[in-house]
Image 1: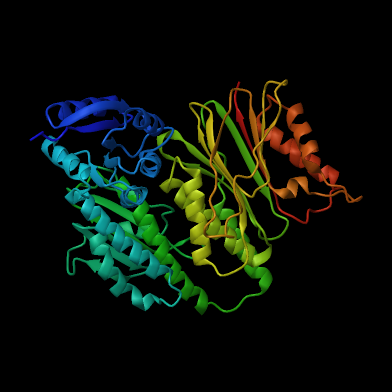
Image 2: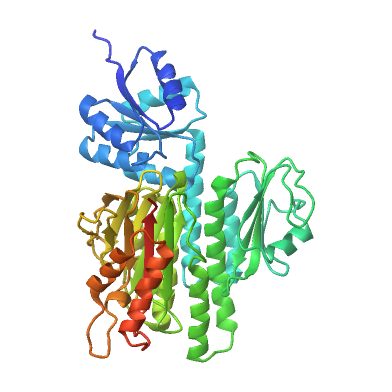
Length: 535
């Protein structure tokens, strides 16, 4: 009887030392044959097409194209080829994304050679293989998903929170001591019941002023004085109120891996935002009614807090952005989102309405884009697809939002982008003989159709190039004669100032708009973002 042929395997990982270690593992087994190695997702897809392996050992986080996107492409084009995800990341949402992309198994990189060998054989024969750690992470993700859905439910009240948190949080944060407190001293969760808290009163007092979650590993200094001398990790996170000042806090003491706290932060932020939604809704319902103008002013202040205070400082690049609101609130927004591997997300968007409704819709859209940009750091099309589905599931109105979202790799100048029905940005070359690139729409606006999809495109900026992003308040500004400012005037100003700082280009365009309209206040919001690669 002929023996079974060896399993033909490709390794895809951007770390040479990992590829070397895995190849050493695989060569020690006669029933596994290594047929190729790839440094990123794009190379993995090309190598699969050339070699037609039985299985791909795929890392998650890789440059150019990550492992989840590569898995999705491979499983769509060659469904007979299995993918086993192998990663050091323990983020729940990445495991779920891998499963949705078609991965047959998921293992963490602390797996030993025999465990990896057994996983390869199982996956090759169509069996799902999730290591115990991955299975636990999936269970945690399921509890978190249910909890998030419950916290968003309109009928839930603060009095429902203790039972809900007790049902799900111990599974989301196993082997942890948990306290959820609404200030000054109302405990919504104390788990395990009766445990002696190591979180001092000074820590809770500091948390009432803390703007962001903070982690403390053994030996770290406390901002309120003293040192974290426990053999555990500590996370303290504020629960923001309607005015963004903390109304409560969460403390998590982790015993199993006190140095591995960063992976928990996205989950903790999501938890705090969900609790904030429930408690803030109750607080606002108890607040006496105010005038519409006061509410608009308050909404405008909240919006201002959402926008970045300043553009990031990126070596070799110069960025600037400004929003000028036509009213107390704005339907425009922009953002700079720090992503893994040194990349940056660039967002400019416009809600198609005005007033309080547009302000709230803007806040929701901005938060969702930031959330899913971080979840899909190399896949802007996936990120906006997730945002679109959430907008349609979380809102019942008729508003929608146009958006341009790009992922910039500062090292290479490569930009992946999606244009969801937004005004086309312009890539103006530092080479005067080269035509201007108009980055047209790659799909419809967000919030229109749940089945909509967006095409993802790629450009590359070289030193001297300028990328100009704007909302229609710039090009549709009118002078007293009813003429529009238009795109050509905007481009002429940019061309005349090529090589100038991004802030100077931005100010020149906005000044020209004001002069064109005769100093009359605009009827629409004006937003402009300039991204220049230094020569």
